[in-house]
Length: 111
Image (cartoon, rainbow, N blue to C red; front, side, top):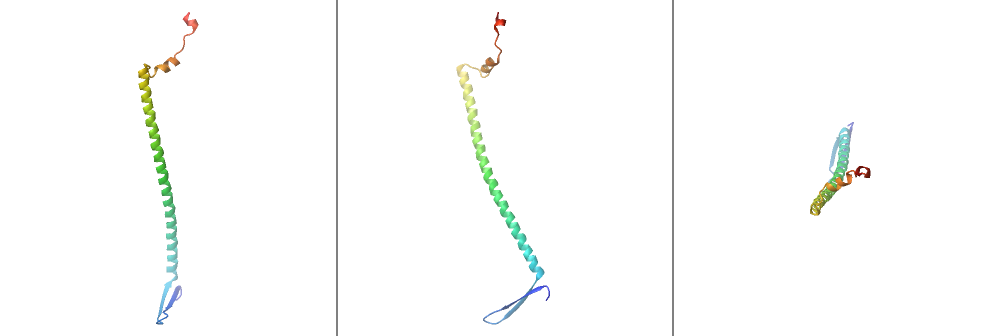
């Protein structure tokens, strides 16, 4: 019985004996399989944690995106209101900048 482990089980009430043997190679394979399963379980747990972190980050980015879109809509509304106010005051949108950027005539040219 080389290369095998033999187990002897004796019942205390009846005294019956049971005997079985397991190959050492089988035990080695089961140990390796257990290690592989343990390793894959740990890797899966780490990926699960990473997935949760990415979901939280995605939700946070979605909230920030919504906030930026709200700010953008507010800016657009303010620009529209500014244009309507300029029209009411009789100013054109580009006239204020054109007046400031146009060269002023010097006194020598005026004479």
